Image (cartoon, rainbow, N blue to C red; front, top):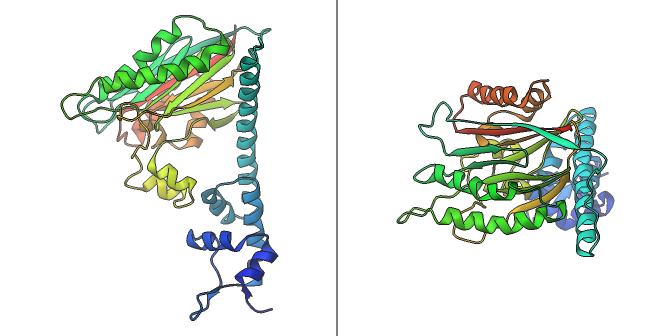
Length: 355
């Protein structure tokens, strides 16, 4: 059989011609040949298995950059990658389902808090910061208490340290009282505007400091998450480490659009360029989510001084060790130091235990 036109190949593969042109542009599925006169793309029938796999992966919602990685793996490794992806989708969907049920109940006047009322939970936590091996000042801040865990990363320069500290200080009043779980998200959504204004109030002359912020506010078994920037929150549950936040950076946006893969993004010179930050002068859009904590959960909040230099596998090993939060924080900082610690390091480790 000879080469297939893009229309015939689209019909045989289950992909549209428009999708095939996009996948050609991003280097995911290149045509076997291009007609030099007409410019028409031509495909080899032998490319159909790959094209059908791409079509199926798109149907389950996998991003293009991740599809490119999966398609480059051996079948066994590809199966493991798809399993890991779907496990994360399932966890995210379950979290969204809980949030949707919570909001429906709350808005309809119900009294359900989705808490495990028969289980009393307690928290053991620790926070730590380190200047790192290269920087001469620390613009990161970290805070941990029974009800509030937070990290912030101020922009290097005048006011960066004050910006990160101010962002966390503006949230601390929320942790003074054990508020109803039904009010957690509402309180955080309202507070983020106050945090943004507090950071903008630090402006001096033409310099406006900005900061990232990732925080968890707890009431009983409910944890409300607020996130702006490239600080991160992770959850270790049942030996699996999940990333709960998405970086608000230019390179992450390019990954989401299929323009960069994760390896390219990690090495890109603009990898630290933020597209969202507190204090930037425009109303900030924060990511908000509600989670149900379970006994045995371990949460990690950290700045990119840790997450950018220590890979997820090493983070999982360190967090899985049977060490208390203080020792774990020290171990994480040591891991970043071993990788050269080119940036400030901030992290919080919080263990959820049965009370």
